[in-house]
Amino acid sequence: MALLQIKNLHVSVETEQGPKAILRGVDLTIRSGETHAIMGPNGSGKSTLAYTIAGHPKYTVTEGEILLDGENVLEMSVDERARAGLFLAMQYPVEIPGVTVSNFLRTAKTAIAGEAPAIRGWVGEVREAMSNLKMDSDFTERNVNEGFSGGEKKRHEILQLELLKPKFAVLDETDSGLDVDALRIVSEGVNRAKDANGFGVLLITHYTRILNYIKPDFVHVFVAGKIAEEGGPELAARLEAEGYDRYVNA
Amino acid sequence: MEIVRPGSTGHSHGAGIPIQTRNERLRSANPAEHNAVSKTDEQWRYLDAEALGGLDSALLGNAIDSIQTQGPAAIERVDATDSDFGRAGLPEDVATANGWAAATTALKITVSGEQSEPTTVSIANPGKHSAAHLIIKSEAFARGVVVLDHTGDASIAETVEILVGDESELTVISLQDWSESAVHTSAQFARIGRNAKLKHIVVSLGGKTVRISPTAEFTAPGGEVELLGTYFAGEKQFLEHRSYVDHAVANCKSRVTYKGALQGDGARTVWVGDVLIRQAAEGTDTYELNRNLLLTDGARADSVPNLEIETGEIEGAGHASASGRFDDEHLFYLQARGINPLDAKRLVVRGFLNEVIQQIGIESLEARLNESIEAELARSNN
Image (cartoon, rainbow over all chains, first blue to last red; front, side):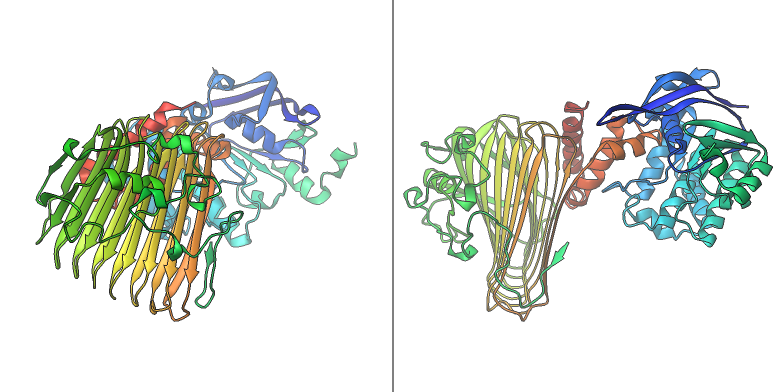
C-alpha cells in the first residue's frame, strides 16, 4: 500500500512582475487504488499542482511538503520522482525529434525498472497495450509525439502509464481535446492499467464528462489555489448541474 | 519544408551577398588567381581568416609521407603527369589552391574488381601547415569502400579527387575525428561515370576548424549520388560543410542529407547545399535536406540550400532545411519518464545522428564514432 501526501503546499511562479503565488496551502492524501478527481475553473491552479508533483523547474515550492511513502519528494530530481513511482500524463506532451516511440518506451522502462526488459516479453507487452488503445502497430516507428493528433498524443501518454506501472498517476486534463470515442478508449486504458497495477489516481479535469468513464472515489473542488470543498462522487454531479459559479463568486 | 517545382529558376536563399551562378566560380590550381579570404566573398562569409591558421597563405608541406594505408585497393604515388591528376576538379578557393600547389605528389587509391573489405587511408598527425592530395578511383564495374580517417593534430589543406568509373559503385567515407586544435580544409571533387554510383559520407566530430566541400559532377546519364554527412560541434568548434551537385547531364539522381548537433558556447556549424540542374539535365531527380539540433544556448547553425534549375523537364527537385532546439521542455518530458538528463540527451542525439552513422555499414567504425559522440555529450553536460 503506497501513500502520497501533500501537506500545506504553497507554490509560486516567476513572472515579469516578480513571483506570483498560485497554490496557497493544498492538503491532499491519496492511497493506492483510490481515484481522486481535482475539479475547478480555469486558472485555479490544477495543472500547477500536477507539474509541481512531477517537479517541473518553472514552479517554486515556497512552503509545505510532498511525501511519497514518507520520502521527501521535493528533494528529488524529476527523473528520481518518476523512478520513485510518480507518473504525470501531460496535457501537452512535447515532440522529441529523432527518437522513435519504440526506443523511447524501452529507454523509459529500463530507467524505471533499473534493468532492460527482456526483449521478447516486452515487445508482446507493448503490442498488446497498443492494441488495447486501438493504436496501429507502425506507431512505434514514429518519432515521439511528432505529427501526432491530439488523440494520439493522449493515447501515447496512457500507453506509457500502462507500461511503466507507477505507484501514482497524475492525469492532467487527459480528457481535453478528445472526442467521445477517443475519450472512452483512453478512459478504458486508465481503468485497465489501474485494475492491473492498483495505483492511485489524481485525475485533474475541468469537466465532469470523463467521470462517467473513470469513477472517482473522492472529488476535490479547487478554487484560487486551494481545495474549497471535498466530497464523494455526488459532488461531481452537483458541479455538473451548478457549475463553479458558487465558488468563484463566493 | 519547401518543394521547388519543376520550371522555377534561380532559386536561392543567400540573403545579403549576391550569389553568382554556381558554375561560374573560378577554378584554378594557382593560388594567386583566387581572391583572398574575405567575409564579403560568399565562400568565406561564415569563417574568419585567422581560423584557417595560415592554410590560405603560408607555405605548406606535402604530408604524403605521414599517410598510411591498409586494405585491398592499389596504392601508388603520382604527380601531375598522371592522366587522373586534376581530372575530377580544380581548386575553387585559395586554401585548396595553396594546398594543391604544395602537394605536387598525390596518393592514388585504385579500387578494382569487387572489394568487400574497406581500404583505410589514415591521415594521422600530418603536422602543422601541411597539404595532401588524394585520388580515389574506381575502375569500370568495380565495387569498393575507401575510408579517409583523419585523426590527431594538424593544420592541413587537402584535396580529394574521386573518379567513379562507368557502372562502378564506390563508397567514400571521410571521418574528421581530429584532436581539438586541428584545422582542416578538404575539397572533395567527385566525377561520376555512366550508370555509376557514389555514396559519400562525411562525419565531422573533432577539430577546431573543419571545412569540407564535397562536389559531385555527373558526366554521363544514369549516375546516382548520395552525399551524406553528420557533424557534432562542441564548444568553440567551427564545422562547415558545403556540398555541390552538378547535374550537367540527363537522367541522374542525387540525394543530399546532412544532419548536425551543436552543444556549448560558440559551437558553430554551417551547411551550404548547392544543386545546379543544367539545361541538358532532363529527367533529373534531386533532393537535399539539412537538419540541425541545438542542444544548448550559445550555439549557432546556419543552413543554406541553393537550387538552380535551368530546365523544367525534370523528375523532381526539392530541399528541406530546419534547425530545432532540444530544450528544457524536452528534457522535462524525458526525465518525467525516469530517464536521467545525460541519458535523455544521449537518446535524442543518437536518434538524430544515427540516420547517417548507420549508413557507414562498418561496425567497428560506427562503434568508434558513437563513442566519440558520447564523449562529446558527456564533456559539457550540465
